[in-house]
Image 1 (tube, rainbow, N blue to C red):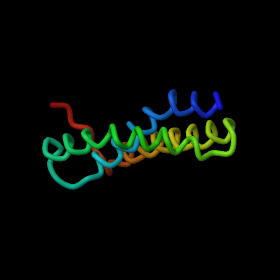
Image 2: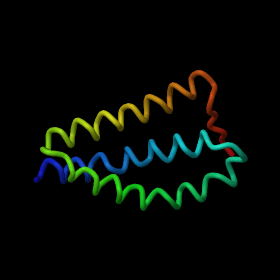
Image 3: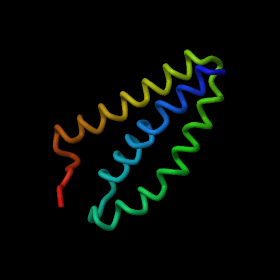
Image 4: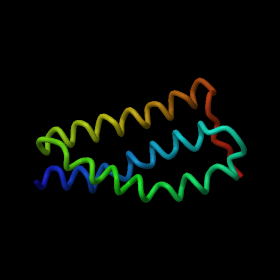
Length: 91
């Protein structure tokens, strides 16, 4: 039980940030208009991600799935930025 709880607590927020980042940066339109609604959706998504961890059969599987999805999310963010499909614009 502790393995799942720790996976949810430590990997839930980074996975949520990766998903929200992918959606926000990939969404068409001006970033000033798109960012706020998706940031408001981050809390419900975070709760959903943390709750979903407890469907895993073991703590090891929870860590593997959450860790793998987190690494995949950030790899996609960096890969899409590298090829120029998404752009991070500083104000």
